[in-house]
Length: 72
Image (cartoon, rainbow, N blue to C red; front, side, top):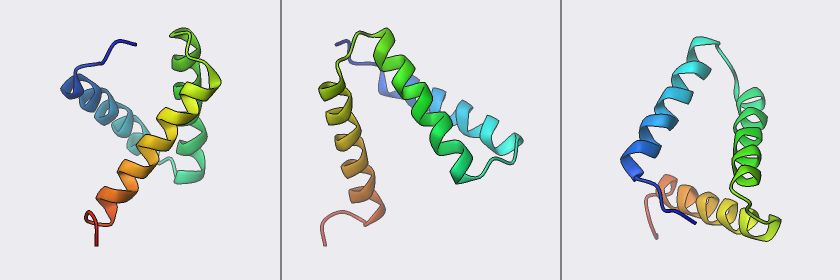
């Protein structure tokens, strides 16, 4: 898999956040929308389900770690 430029990824995420904010979307709306984008992207890249779920787990754990302020 190609590793994307992290700055480019952050820029895209910020653009998506702006759209969510402009539409006054709430979490129970944004989650399935973001998940749908992730699934379609994974399928377009030919990623298998196991790899997709591993990436999801890694991102989830990393985000949780950052929200908790690192290891306590």
